[in-house]
Image 1 (cartoon, rainbow, N blue to C red):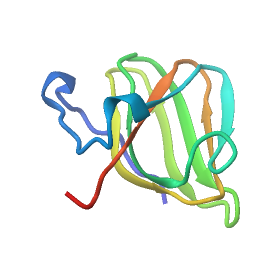
Image 2 (cartoon, rainbow, N blue to C red):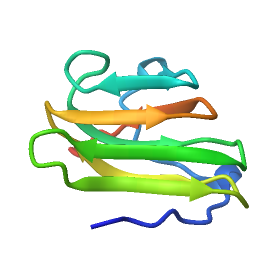
Image 3 (cartoon, one colour):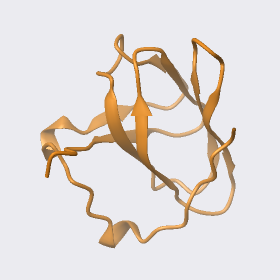
Image 4 (cartoon, rainbow, N blue to C red):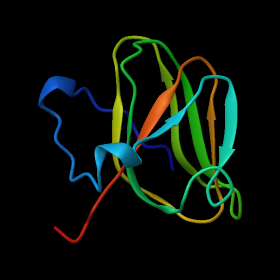
Length: 104
């Protein structure tokens, strides 16, 4: 199942952060796997670049978490659950994984 991106006002976006220091920056042109390149957990995904492609899927069962071909606006995906076998491919731009503190 493909999830859609959402239009958001990034200036008024206030997720529950574990801390600003824990934001994970993934550079463009990368293939990243949870547990190897970033801890498993819950994240919001953010970019301010209005163009690009982002693919996130579960390696175990090949289910798509996010598959976005974004050509109009900056996007965010909220409350993504990245277990130990999630692969992220961001072809054209860097992204930020914002760790969520779900206990607050």
